[in-house]
Image (cartoon, rainbow, N blue to C red):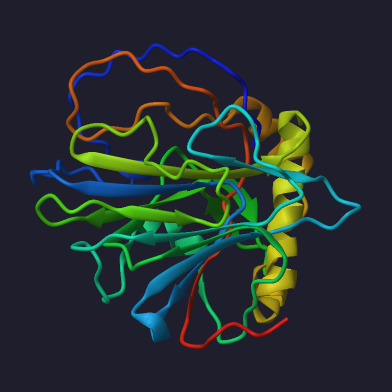
Length: 289
């Protein structure tokens, strides 16, 4: 996933997005006070059933010999300091709940369970309360599991949605004073957004990006979910898959709105072909390093 400075003028008519092509019904609910947390790229998400279904999202730091990653916060065109580890904690008073979130069926291929997991050295770690819903945007990339050659579809991101009561405001705590942890400028009335993004440091072509994404997904399983690696590691990309990647570059829309007035938006980046990490449910605390 690479960032490029772009100006993307989007004249958006009022609409409701059916995420990932998995839902076709219009939601008539009034979205008066919503929080969206966008996790783009190689984040693992853990649903902690033993902690009121709260979410821990993290992205392991790549091995020194591998393609380095960079972390971007709230759409900044510049990455944060790669030598630091960043931690965040979101409080959404009035929107916090303890029931398991609704998970979009388009994420089913990469929704797993384990009782053995760890975080380890990560570029970013994000603590989040249980959301109402976990979904995604854009369409998914075909991949194959190595163990049984089963075809699957991998999203590029996760979006966590919260419904707040009345005029309650979310609060994001940051480990680094250099970060301005206000909502993203891409928020709009009734919808507050936070963006967290991980991607390779150097520019990769589509084939390289796809191969890197497969390798890093497998690395996440190896480092953080060792019991899942044997069953759910991805197979290396085939030549046919490379042709598919060339025909279907990925781009996440710069404007993702519910019922917002038509407007022009400035976007600081687009997202190239990259995978999200696994979505894992657990009932246990992480293994200590």
